[in-house]
Amino acid sequence: MNKNDFGYEQVEKQEHYNKVQDVFNNVANEYDLMNDFMSFGLHRNWKKEFVDLIEINDEKKTKILDLAGGTGDIAKRILKNHPNTSIEVIDKNFMMLKESNTKNNILKYNKINLICGDGESIPLNDNSVDVVTLSFGIRNMTDRLKCLEECYRVLKPEGLFLCMEFSMPENYTLRNIYDAWSFFVIPKLGKLIAKSEDSYKYLVESIRTFPKPEEFVDILEKANFKRTSIKQLNGNIVCIYKSRKI
Ligand SMILES: C[S@@+](CC[C@H](N)C(=O)[O-])C[C@H]1O[C@@H](n2cnc3c(N)ncnc32)[C@H](O)[C@@H]1O
Image (cartoon, rainbow, N blue to C red; front, side):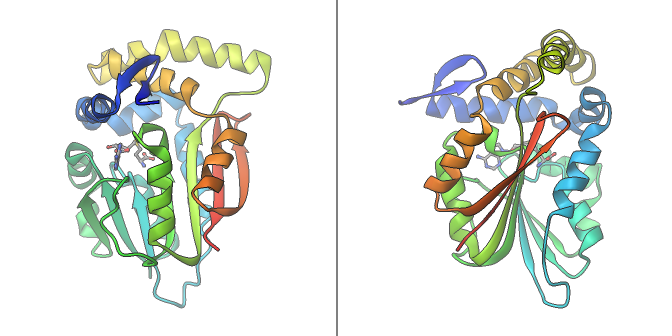
């Protein structure tokens, strides 16, 4: 139990942590562009659906944590829908945060704060945020339960937790097409565009070793989250988990 899946490889926890950092150091420059190519632009719809699930009272001052916020795409979208909220974007990878500023110009929004910090030890107080969003981040955490417990800790009671992650299509034909695209095309696109074939090989493998939706709900429950519902997108290629801290 001391080892972690890094794609299809089994590695020690510290090695897993370092390798994930390497992946995002390698891809940070072309991260957003690669998302467009890999998903035919679909990631934009997924992110829209995700952010549209945020329920807050816009009359009140609210604080949102966008954990593993990467290049700041989610934070920008949240602020567009909810201009009164303030957002803490926390990510472990400095290169990804740097991109959020150089490409997405995130620091021009004075309601967004960028923090280089760890999702397994979130640098925020207990019961301090109204909503936590975690988009395509949980798969990359070395200790997923620890990360979810941290999300729970920083949420206020009744706070909303939204987590989006890849899953696998249920339909046989779609699954075969998705597998072919994932294993034969995505790593080559990674080589061509981001100059890192291995990072995108990790991406497709890590999607397949990530727990199935019902298993992930069990982990959410272990972290104490309640009232979890799942929204499946594009034939279960992506799932959005919506839970509460009670
Ligand atoms: C696939 S990207 C997702 C970025 C963004 N949320 C999005 O939806 O486009 C995963 C992010 O998780 C971050 N990450 C990985 N491990 C982390 C950790 N332990 N703590 C915080 N962030 C982490 C990576 O640096 C990367 O920016």
